[in-house]
Amino acid sequence: MGRNLLLQQIERLLVLSLSHQAGGAPPADFKERQQKQADTINKTMLGHLVDRYGTEVLQDAGVEVPEEEGPADWVTFSFRISADAKFVEAMRRDMKLMTDQRNGAYPWLPAKMAA
Image 1: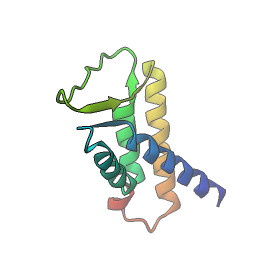
Image 2: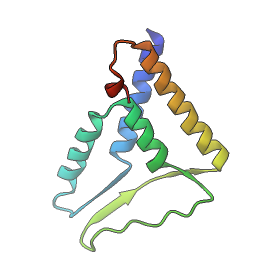
Image 3: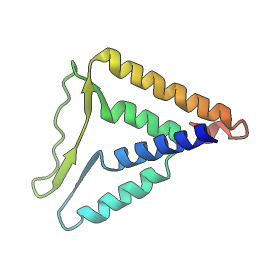
Image 4: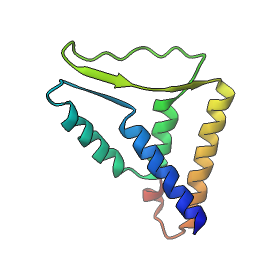
């Protein structure tokens, strides 16, 4: 029971982080678009959350990431976590292991949904 609660909390943290990791819209539409993005991410399975977090948030500090720009009249933002390559790879590996262990805890979970 405790392990499942921990996995649920980690999943919720990933949803919260990815819901607010990046955004952009004209000021008049910003709140609506941000809510739509949060609603979409909230329906995403753990495996996909882990993949997105590993590619969109975690960044190797040695790799230059180009700035993403929106139209001039838009409000845009994003955040990333940069660290050395060893740390980033370890985080990605550990998050994948966590997902695999969670999927193993639910043998009835179809493989298509588990990812």
